Image (cartoon, rainbow, N blue to C red; front, top):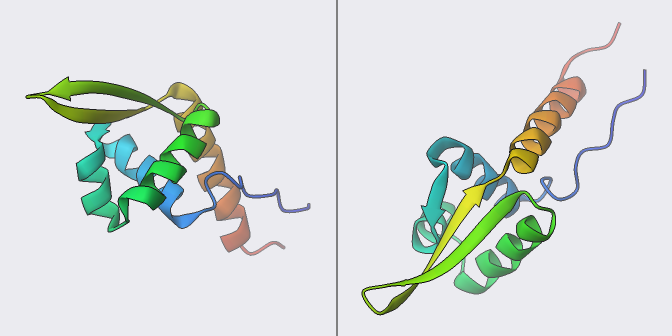
Length: 97
């Protein structure tokens, strides 16, 4: 039995961290994700856009107290992709007979 390829969208450290965080909290502001992942604003923005293009997250932009606010939420597609990624990764870690 051949090992399945790991999802290239999720197999990047920052994107995997963002999806993992969003699975725990359901939605999070940009600042929270930046703080939790210890990433730069520019890098985080690029990686969030890639997750959005893959339909793994939704991004809502609004204003809160006259300041821009970006809120990210995980989608069902994102949850399903993460679960499949974990299953496929476990296959790499499980000895084959």
